[in-house]
Image (cartoon, rainbow, N blue to C red; front, side):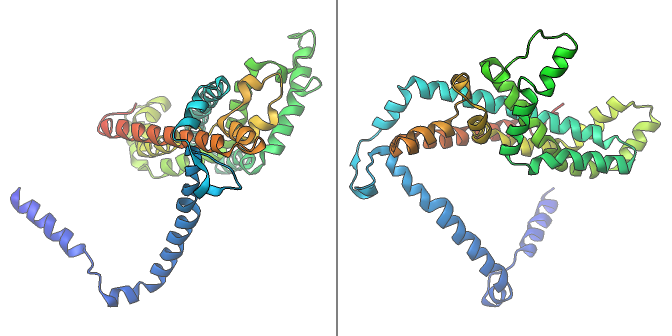
Length: 318
C-alpha cells in the first residue's frame, strides 16, 4: 500500500507543469483571452455589488452612495414588516418549487421515453418539435395561453362541446388556476430543451449493459431503473444542485404578463415587487434589500443542496 501511494504521488508530481516565462509565452493567447473574461466578470459581476450599499442607506439619487444617510438594517425591518412582501415570498417560493419539480422530472421522463423510440427519424422530429418552444419569447407564449384559455379559446370550446361546462370559464379570474398555468407554461416551453443534456448522458451509457440486461430477461422498466437512471445519476445531481439555487427565480415575464388585479395576490414575485417598489416608486433601497434577500436565500439553498449531495454521494439515488 505504501508503495502504491508513493507511485501515485510521484505521478501527480510528474503531471505538474512548472510556471516559467517560456510556458507563459507559449500560453500567451489563452492568458490574454482569460484576462478578458476575468475583466468582464469584475466589471459586470463584482463592481455592481457596490450598489448593495443602498440597502443600508436612506438612498437619494441626488446624494449618491457616498453621501446618503446610513440607516443600518432599517430597510430590512421595513421589508419584513410588510405583509405584501411576505405574501410575495410565499408566491415566489411556491411557484419556484412547483416549476422546479415539474420541469425537472418532466425533462428526465421525456428524455427516457424519447431514448426508447426505435425510429431515428421519428426521434429527431419529436426532439426538434419539443425544443422549439424554448426559442419563443414569453410574449408569444403568454399570447398563446391567453388565446387557448380565453372564453372563446380551444379549452373552453372543447369543454362546452363535451358538456363538461355549461358556460365558458375565465381561467385568469381565479387565483387557484394561476400557479398550475405558470407551471404548465414552463413545462411546455422548457421540457424539450432541458431534456437535451439528459439524452446526451444516456448516449454515454455502455450499450453492452442493455444487451446483457436483455439476455437476462430484464423488461423495459427494469432496464430504466437499473441501467438508465443510475447511468445519468451524476448529471441529475449536478443539474438539481444548479436548479435549486434558482428556486427564487420563479420568473418575471410570465407572471407580469398573465397577472391582473383578480390574481394579484398569487401572481406577484420578488422581481415584480422590486420593479414596483424599487423602480416605479423610486425607493431604490427597498428594492435593493429585496434583491439581497433573494440572493442570500439562493446561496443558502445551494449550500444546503451541495451538502446533501455530498452526504448521499455514495448512496443510491433510486
